[in-house]
Image (tube, rainbow, N blue to C red):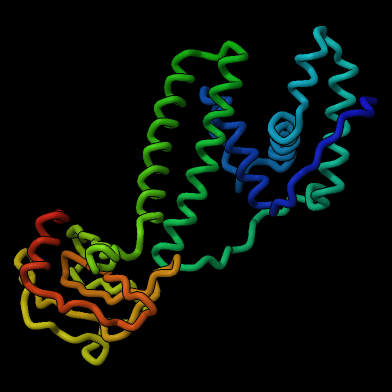
Length: 275
C-alpha cells in the first residue's frame, strides 16, 4: 500500500458532499441521462462520492500520471485508502442520509445574493475542473465547447454579483449613500402591489405616503416607516410603488436621508425598466 499517500478530507455536510459529487459526475458525463442527487439509488451516488473524493480532493490522478506505467494494483490500493478514509470521516456513508433536512437560511435579500455568489464560485470550480479533465482525456469537442460557454456565463454572473456586493455603501466625496433599485415586472394573474422587502403585511399603519405618484404605474409612492435590514450590513429606508422599489442605505440605521422627490423617482423609473 502506498505509504506516502497523504490527504485530508473536508468536514462537509452530507448534503454538500452528495450535491458536489453528483454535480462533478454530471459535468463529465454530459451525454448520459442526468442524475437526481435526491432520488438516485444510494449505491450509485456512493460510487460518485468516492470518485469525487479520489479525483478532486486528493492527488490520486497526479500519482497515477507520474507512475509512467499502467499499474492496477497501485491504483486500487490508493482507491482503497481513499474509501477507508471516507468512511471514517463520513460515517453516514454507511446509510443513505437522504432526504436532507430543510436548511434554515436567512431570507434577507443581500444575504441570499451572497449565498448565490458562493454557489456560483462552486459552479465555476466544477466547470474548470471538468473542462481540464475532458481535454486531458480527449473528450468530445462539442461537450467541451458547451462547458466553456457555461463557464463564461458563470464568470460574468460572478463579476456582476461581486461588483454589486462590494460596491461602497457611502460616497463621502459626494455626500451620498448607496441606493439599490429593483423594478417589478407585471405578472399575469397577479395583482400588482407594494414591495418593501419585509415579511410583514403592507398595512396603512406601517407605511406613509410621501406626496406624489409614480409617473409610470401612477400609484402613490410610499415609504416603509421602519428601517429594514437587507443583509450584508445594510439597513435601509425603503420606498415603493407597484413597479419599483428603492432601498436607501442609512449609516447607523438612523434613517436620516434626503427627502425623496418626484424628480428623483422619475430618474429611477427611466433607468430601471419594467413591463
